[in-house]
Length: 87
Image (cartoon, rainbow, N blue to C red):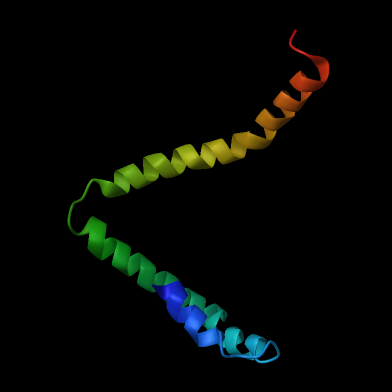
């Protein structure tokens, strides 16, 4: 829904007007405020309600992170295996 509102804001702008419209949105202070609001909303939704979801978020996030960290090495191994055949 937020992306649709953002699209509706910028669809009437000309290309030259776009940077001046986006600069205040992506300023450091605005991004800090948005991050703070997101953390407050997360705390209110999951932490204060004693939900088990934060534990699941950490587990799945850790699995995804470890997969992304190991991916380049795995790709090198697969490329080497394809070039030299299976031993």
